[in-house]
Length: 259
Ligand code: DC
Image (cartoon, rainbow, N blue to C red; front, side):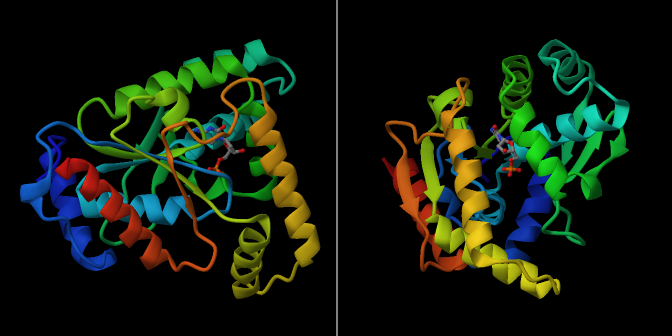
């Protein structure tokens, strides 16, 4: 197996392999050192599902860094931190303990997010928290704290880490760097389908506008803007299914470890 993280986790991923993946990576091709796969890209490009599945295929830890920024935003709101005070937000980020629990066999699609032992998973994906997270993630002190945590999380084994600055800031020496993206229209179309499945209808142009605004905010902030690392492989997912993207990334990883 690829990683030297806990046996329980390895077993869990090995078991997940058979349930949520199409094929597994032949272990004789894997490197003896920990493999770090950085997956960056804008919101709505499908990073989470693809990164989670790829991690299961590789037997690596899946780390959703966006969930960590969301955890800080939600906790700030919950405890009444002054949202306009960068020092207070930094202090909060330094104080709290964020835990990401990997998917389980019963719940293969959900990473559970805990702050100081309290499970906040169900609260961090609302539109209000998404907006607040986008603002809070521009605070340098918050970023510094979370980047340190992210480096430590990946210290004990192979990891597929998903975010905005993984290939540029968190792991500039990552073995594999992917910038996963899709046009705003494609991302709006996917989001519209998701919303329709839950019985909600939204205006397509409005969705495109929101997505483009968030892209602009994330890619123009001063600290760690959303840009592809110079050595990242840019993957445009327009017209590709999730299975096809996982397959493509798996091939990129295999090519890398065979070098
Ligand atoms: O991936 P996501 O939608 O859960 O991310 C939520 C917000 O956090 C988004 O506005 C971008 C920000 N983020 C970031 O600045 N850096 C990361 N590594 C991950 C997320």
